[in-house]
Length: 319
Ligand SMILES: [Mn+2]
Image (cartoon, rainbow, N blue to C red; front, side, top):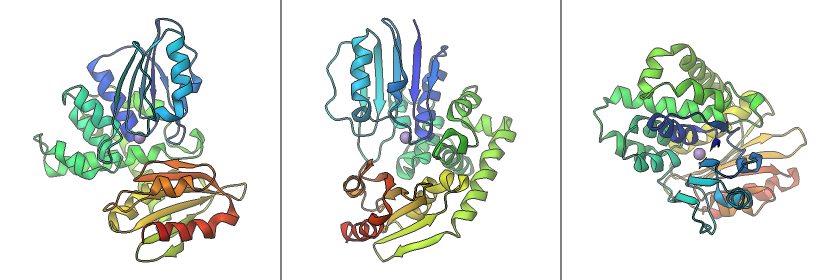
């Protein structure tokens, strides 16, 4: 009998599993990838009696494999905040799914564990750019403002580490990063005791962000702005967090960060205005390979001849 821990390689995915494994330490098979790699259940070949924890990956995108896994006699605990579609009824399936815009998977697990490892939940929520939700939990702790800022930065760095077209782009493979963090009940202890790895993330983040701030502006109006990053490792790593940063600086504006791909198409990451968390999914699904959530969505390969149409729609939809 095996346990599979399947989790998105971003901050709230990693922080969700950290809480579960601090609460119950078991030897599990880790299945994860870059943040964009969400069809993770497809990798599983399970047997009767196995157990699967699926964290922070859309049930809608994994539905067929979820049904296949359940049919093969394994049990599943599914916890997520992305679009789920119809949730199947099955005696072996336990779900904790909430697509609300102010919730992420590390917060759902925090509720599930009644706040036992809430510092990790705070890191995950900050990493998912849910500042208000993270602060709401931070206020229930004795954390100082300096410590809260440290947790916020740490969440941003973990989230940043998950972006990239392939594992090869990343500073740490998400499974490796999870394993480094899994020794600590409290993220502050990791920061204190493993300064080497913490600084590797911190330095990488700041270097990439400095490059991003010099990127080309494709469009900038009062309602939207779009930026173009080159087809380079640093750009693929930083595009998502750069988008969050832009959103935080101009909360009434929608933002798109585009990255050139080798085949001439664009990888697109869209952030709805923080003060109007809507339409990002609608906008992106109007284009081939687009998808996501209302507040944050993306297009995997926008054809170059649809760039103008995309920029126009970005502006229109938020007018
Ligand atoms: Mn996530």
